[in-house]
Image (tube, rainbow, N blue to C red; front, side, top):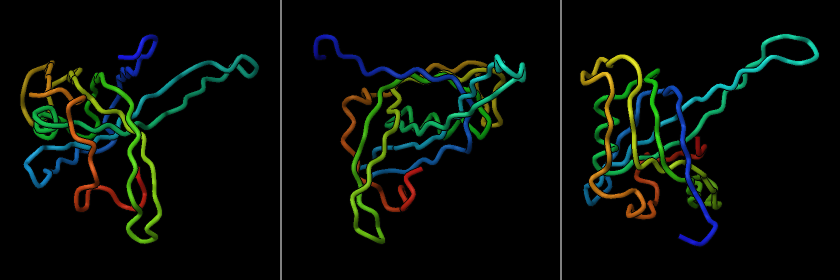
Amino acid sequence: MAKGSVNKVILIGNLGRDPEVRYTPNGLAVANLTIATTESWKDKQSGENQERTEWHRVVMYSRLAEIAGEYLRKGSKIFIEGRLQTRKWQDKTSGQDRYTTEVVADSLEMLGKANAGGGNENLAAAPERSAMDAPQMAPVDGFDDDIPF
């Protein structure tokens, strides 16, 4: 790690949809998630409660991706840690280069009640190999469409 450099993301939020799990041609599991985080505050001038939701793209690899696909569902509350990564891909229709910034998760914990997929109240998981070791991925067939979100 470069001196004075940190790339660390911590999110606690709810899944916006069920995880999408795909496999690369060499068998590596890849899960795509969208996590919503909501910030609430009281407007100082009007006194009204305000709220803003941010949506975050998250990708998981290997065993962590398989666990996400098995246990997580839309609405699941989760805690993840990872790093930001920007990747380049080509738009299928125009051929133009596009960029997507996402969180590459290297740990996951389910919060709250167990989901329909079964399992424990809390699930701590680590991938079989570090997400830092995961290959720089090109889109898998049907993995990314023209809209990167």
